[in-house]
Image 1 (cartoon, rainbow, N blue to C red):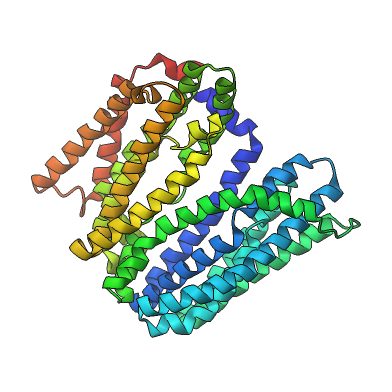
Image 2 (cartoon, rainbow, N blue to C red):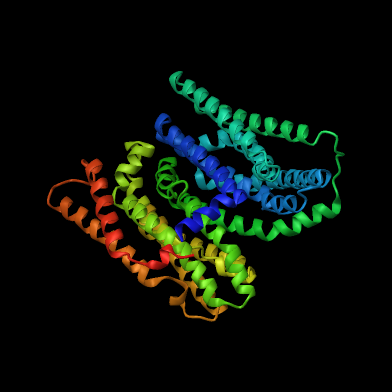
Length: 487
């Protein structure tokens, strides 16, 4: 089965390339945050994280799922170069309109943020926020454009070269003790350079084609993108509401920085489970169309068997060694983020499967947006209540409760859609064996720590191999599931 899924990942070049491209962008952005956390004073870094929250919300509002719509319609126009160019120009018109709309909303949000943040430095830097967000919106369709045109190599090489140059200039800013404005100037110029280089390349690719903006194509793209974009906006609010609400009770940029550095998913973890869920989805759709619920659940079980044995030990490792990880990524200045990160990481334990795969396979996608909207409302309520009660620690607790409730509710509805029990959605015996294989080394690590053999903080370099070795031994001894090798 493992060979089967790996073969499918490799053969499905579009999905694999898309995840690779998204992973590259996410990793680059994360590396930038880690670098700045080391070189900027905590007050400046906290102000920068406030600014990035403002920017992310602006980009999400302006891009509104247009990149996904572009990918769908470009894929349908593979053999017609003029039609491809029409789709790209329609998407450009929409992101330009989205950028203008986003400016309006960002001005509105700036008034709210400036009051909540109560930070003069944020107010001074917000001009960079507007510019970086506008460029980010215009860039939002580039990856999928290059993917459909089979020109990802150019995109990757260009992105990496510009990123390397960006970090060289950022290092120069550090060694010359430059103010934060200079760092933001470098980041903005790098974004503009990527946009110009990619736009020029696409125009050269379509040399000779007519520039048309077809109204019908605009309408089709907008209709496809709108529900996706609303879902993405809900997700963005989920990722940032806790930080904004914290500022209602604690206005210091230092607190914002500590919370931001604790509430994140390690890059590529989300990409890992989504990759297998995406590859499995066509088979699940086919089984649903045939009315074969048993086969649909079998396919789901297959990809869970590939995700859980990697996800569970990695996430538990993040929780155990959270202090060491946070210190390594962001420096010892942010050690307070470790306890937040440990709580927040428990959310990733329910990422062993997609919460929406059965909705997508059955075509019941209306549930996704509705549930996400309810999830956001519940999360905002819990944030206000728990942050007021427990301070900064209330934020990850609110996220934990909301995500686990969402997992339970989506599982219940998925079971009803497929007319089965909740337990039938998961390979329960397999998951219990994986959990057992993780709990044994976890118990041993904490026992050693209790006996003053500090394999968590001082001797983490010894504790991690011990944890991994015991887990792998138990995994191969106790998990004797023949279905792993089937299909």
